[in-house]
Length: 214
Length: 394
Image (spheres, chains in turn purple, yellow):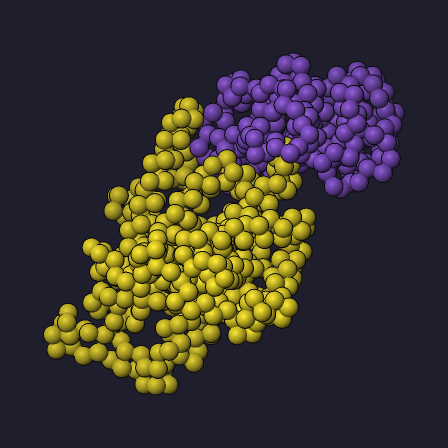
């Protein structure tokens, strides 16, 4: 999902994730055929939608291992009791995740907050992956990262896509996003103004010029 | 400097935590035994050093009932810190659980049974149920709204005890339980009697009961904080919404933290009722909620042992320093250095009239100089520094 600052990209992700703000006033969010529009955030999450929000997406005072482990705690009885949710989805094995992010394996007992920006981003994605989501939403995952780190994160995202997980990537950096996207949506003032494959967007000079400035 | 060592440790033990959960659990258990043993020793030594040890106790002017009171409040602060320090919820109404537990235990002693252990059970049960209801009502809002709501409900309880329930609570006069209403421990051990073998240390069964409660509280709190529950508490403290994104039922965990915290506060409250043999109505007043906040900040927010240290310092200033009409420096110094004389400061230098100011200054100093760790954090970093020196700069 592409668009300028303030176009409504983050708002869309938050609406899907079911946060208190924005309040969804019209329309529905359907996932696997269920209406999840007004479900609490935590219930949306356990249905297989993981949002990696912008900036500082981890628990800085928890160790890397704890950050990962918390996704398992979600299945504990104490978290499930009294809630109308089912856990039929499997979990991704730690080893598979650390194969995608080998850096994390080396830093397991380090506090999340002491990691570099890129490592924190990897940890955030890794934790989301641990829940084996069907839809992984990444809000500006490349922001503030050094170019070679961006490449590493990009490679990871591509690998996740190849594993069959739907990735909804929000980016301001249109070029980087188009490189790995199957489909592109351009948003402006809360409306989808373009919808098509990455190649179609590349070919559509007017849309690119008008809404993305590239 | 500390970052550097942190990283090195992280790299070294990185592989270690990849080993199965069982091994990690064993490590936790080992640390737990250590923490519990250390607490037991501290609890055992504290009244001796404070009340009976030569020189130190004379200089400190400690006395047995204050030692008991300090440990009781220490339990209260631990309960409070479980909610504030670890889950990040600042309650300004914890007097409700402390006073509520005390009143429940006291009323039960007068009308049903004065067995100390049963009184404690009643006090805890009452506070847990109360916390469940109040938590349900107050936890919907966060931050300042939560603080104000808990304050309001706490005050509501105070006024209920003051007027409408005065027949039960004794109203303005507080609830006089009376020493005779409180039965001996297990039916045959008078709380005031000396305990064999370790009398030199703890003196009475009363203190032993309180001390055991403290050790159990620390063991319980430590277990909770190192369980997945504790991890979730910390995650919520750091970022509530992020915890929701992971799929955690944040509301429920917050309620659990509130209930646990209320229960421990109720335990402390019932011990208070037993020790004092009366419950002053002020124990429900908002100043009590304020005191526990101050103790917690002085001792160190988010640290198990900081709480009792904060309680000790606060109560020491409020009770001993308040009564210091004359300050004697180098008490009994002649015992160490024959011929040396103690120094008696002139009366205007007595801190008795300024004890509030002293506490205020101490509070400000802690907030300014050691905001994150409080006194406990300060002690720990001094310990680290000494350890680094001794360990050849490592």
